Image (cartoon, one colour):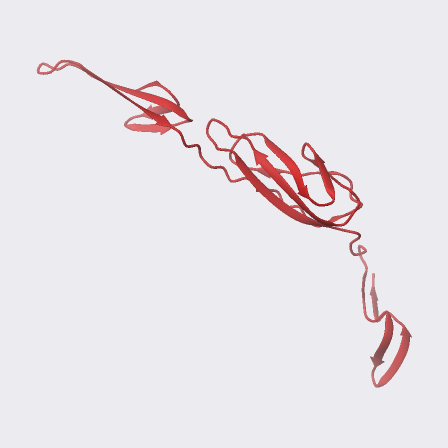
Length: 164
């Protein structure tokens, strides 16, 4: 039986449920040959489980994007706090705001320890670009210069393909 501490007993199995001192006890009933016996032992549980803190993926962002929420998750219920390690962004709570500049944003997360889990950290990075491709349009070819059409060479401003 558990006298005190972060543990449970089921049959002959002891399950640890947290960090601290556990005191286990046992009682043996008296028989016609032997008297009743009581035993106790204690031990200290010091190691927490190590959670794996994982960021939700953050794709490449446009510098003009509106603020958006970021997230990191683990098995622990410890509170997660975020910070911008470097790059063109700032964060308040879990809401990330891009500054309008381009570059690589490095984002860090720290998770507080709980009774069952140690503290954890994680980081991720993503690109911030000036602008992306125009939706539904693609261009290819030479914009200015020399190109060959069959056996003929021409110079000028051209676009070889335009798709909409």
